[in-house]
Image (cartoon, rainbow, N blue to C red; front, side, top):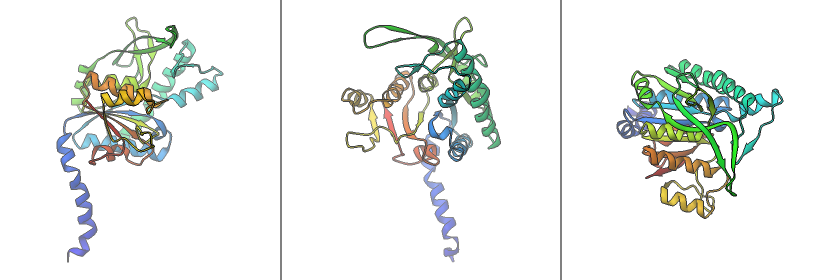
Length: 292
């Protein structure tokens, strides 16, 4: 008799596997740095949005932080403004900053909020002077020779209005933050989204910071995924150049988040369908987890 319900029983079993994690992470803050292919592939984009709304309905408190580098580059190209970078940081003059504000706030942030509402979420939009949640100051970048580079209106996080964010979270909102900060005199600054997410996760004492990328996570010398690392091991992997290139700033963001109060950091491949759920609701996850 039970055979006719076999597929339903299997489905119930899958749901029950999530119970320990639902109990463990209930009422916890999960900061998601949303980026990479998951922002540009329409199917993956929809799945990420669904995952975020599901986390909220499951009793967690997702906070979304996003950049939008490719969209900014495309907009600058249309306006015939050259994109310049110094050690991975965008040089942001006045014209570029205007484009950054328009793209990140007016386009990317608005689209994420619109999609969250469509799935039943309650997003709260923040970018630059809208809410002034991210406090910023000018970033002076020091190179290998000890010379400092003026990157214009490129900035770094100097503080977060975390009490205000707590208040909005408790009211049931999903904060959606573009990586644009505001200085003391009202000047807006373009901030690297990974570093902004790391500081936000630290200030909020988040249970998790999840950095969505286009790679599986940190790989060892043999190309195998490293599932779990601590701060000491991360520094060793960087020193021995096992972590190199674009993964170095991701790893540094992880260290910053842990140092400032986040409990765990995860680097995951956003190209995997429902990557957020797989990382949070399974024993081994799909990426690399940083622990203190």
